[in-house]
Image 1 (cartoon, rainbow, N blue to C red):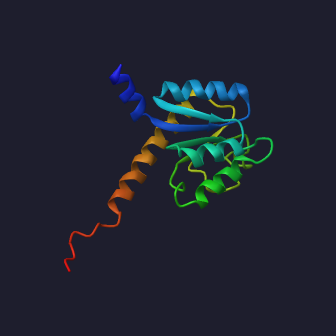
Image 2: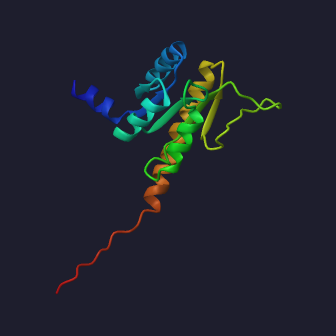
Length: 153
């Protein structure tokens, strides 16, 4: 039992933001299958509350949702110094005429076009893990050194 708790505690936290129940369930299965701890939100407002309370390691968001869009969420996350390094995967049906994915915010780290295929989401989740590891190592490498002296008066 302790081992399972340790595995769950060490799993990367993913916040899935999507209003479509079918897509939400399908992605939840894929995310769980790839050893992530998942939380979910059905819209941008719920996502913002979740992020403020417990920032995830990774965000997967739909682009087009009722109310505020996933693009608005991306802008909000990337504008905050405490959350801007969280990798964001954007799910979208929007494409450029050349077939490339359109990211209206220009700030999503990775994109997946709909319809979503198992191989696409599995690949992008692996890329997100690598990006997260890279950002973590870079942050540690460039962290401000702590003073190593003591002032005695």
